[in-house]
Structure formats: structure tokens, C-alpha cells
Image (cartoon, rainbow, N blue to C red; front, side, top):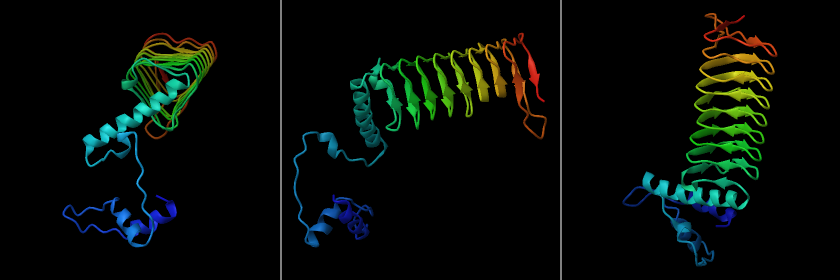
Length: 237
């Protein structure tokens, strides 16, 4: 449709039919009655005219669109081990030589830098990933990950997490509103929330931050090159 014709025609539709529904196809009759020409166009791709009337048909339409998106990225230099199990939103940006392993979901304003490997089993939402990063078995939302960082396996990164270059987070680690410094390590079995971890610091297994005093959140700060032992509770302030 020409956009200028479509909006007025939509306002003239009514649901006077057996289903009680508004039919977009009725716009053709509305335009014809008002003197506009109707032209038939041959379509070579039958999926262009797929109908979506229920959740099953919606899933089939989404599969077609997903295949188109994945085809585009692979043509532009992104590797996908199994495209049928790779889910990339239309709003996502991928650099060349990114490699996506099976069961990866990239959503929202996510950006993946050149040479990074994501997967298997990752969901990244509104997350910025630098170059040459390795991420596996990870869920991240509103997170920034610096170049050459390694994340996972089995990591949950909540909003406000920032991981600097060459840092490592995982295995079985949760972060939230935390700054992980350059080259720092949070290797396993830790919760780091509302915290600043200095460059090259090493957080021992079983370490957690306890920042809530019953009324307010306080921020934990660990300096550069610091090391914590296993089973440590860091209480702020």
C-alpha cells in the first residue's frame, strides 16, 4: 500500500463478519470503491503471503524471518554452528568473524565484537560484548563485557555489570551492578553485587558481597591485586 492511502482506509474497516474481526484485506475493496487502481503482483516466494491467525502460524512466520536474519549475518562473515538453533533479533549487531554456537539467543540492543565466540546455551539481552570474548552457558542482561574477557560456564550477569578487558567470570557466579576490573578473576561459586573489584584482583571460591543493612544498599570495594580466601563474606560499608 501507499502509506498515505492505507491509514484512511483502515479507519473505514468494520468487524461485520462471522468472526467479528477486522480484515486487512478489506482495505483493497475500500480503495477500489474510492476510485484507486488495484494492481496484482506475482510473488516468487510463497512465504511472503503467510497468514498468522494463531500461535502455531506465528511460530512458522518467525522461523522464516529468523532464517532470513541468520542468512544475512552468515553472508557477512558470522559463523553459526547450527542456524536453526540460533536466535538473533533484528536489532542485534554482529561484527565479522563472530562465532555463534547452538542455543544462543541475542536480544534487544546486543552488540557482539569481532572474533568473539558465544555459546553454547547463552541468552544475552541489551548486552555489549567486545572483541575476542569467549562466553559459554551464560545469561546476561544490560551488561558490558570488555575485550578478551572469558565468561562462564554457568554465569548469571544482571543489570549494571561491567567486566573490563582480560577479566574472567565463572563458573557458577552471579553478578549485579558490579565493576570487574581489568584482568580480575571471579572464578567460581561467588556472588558479586553492588561492588567494585580492582584490576588483577582474585576472588576466592564461595565469596559473596553482603551490602544490605536492612535499610540501604552499600557498595563493596576490593582493591587492585587483592586476593580473598574461600568462603568469605564481604560486608559493606
